View 1 (cartoon, rainbow, N blue to C red):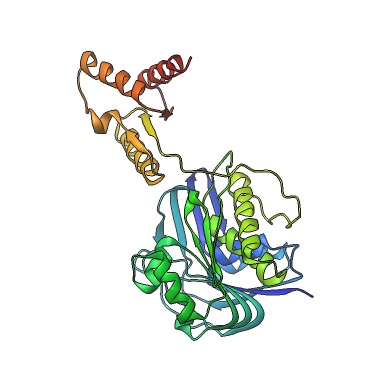
View 2 (cartoon, helix red, strand yellow):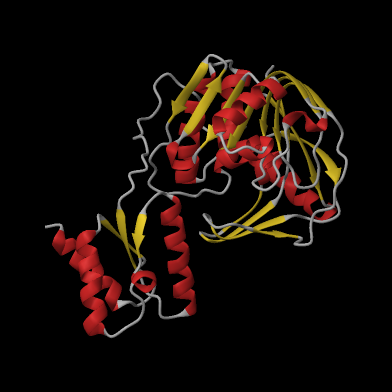
Length: 356
């Protein structure tokens, strides 16, 4: 019988756009992702008394066995939109608690806000889950015969306080005795480091992007393929990337099984280029949306021309001519069609005219 122990946070997730209100967290989502693939799933986490009834309902359908340590209050991650940085409540910090040690053949451990439990397993997959203070796997006294560390670039660098990913990986191989280290890099995909050398796994194109919990699904899928089914790390990471693409496109769990003929998907590439950011900015809410869109596009490596940032307010006789000139020099237009904005519609129409 296949078994897995999943250790980590169960938290309330709320998002305004698109609407989302679920009791998941990293460990909860990973457990749901693996329903139907593993016969026995034990979920080790912490909950407040007020959350127990909902948690029992959420995880009962998948026959997930809850191993719960009481905590004082519920923890909520509140997102304005799924790409935004969440506000975490309670905002004065989460009370630390001690959770029982976990021993098992296959363990997935996520970093938690309220605890750093010790795990001891044969195959262990560890995700530190912290951009500000990522803890090393062994810091809690945890051990593994076979260890995979999965983290984004910032977490990898933060665990060893260095500015070089290659150096961080080398240090972690020695200090943590890891078999494999997977460094995720958003749209650039992931690099799978083994002692024999690195390999690259792409991210895949999706029609929609719901990013909350995407990393949790990656970890769960990798654990299934590598720790349970014993596929090579590069195969497991590619399966994890494809499973993540399915999730961010549909929000559906559990993940699909690993097959020899996966559904075709195009690889995602960070192409760069000059983007004209069109949208209304006369009101406070509109300006906040423009600011956030500009920030997100820049983070993807784009060179962004934003009329309100790069030209500023002014008379139509001057501003419109500069706007249209900028459209002609850009590679694409990213338009926010939110509310009534004749100027934005005109800019989109002008850009379409220029492509024909």
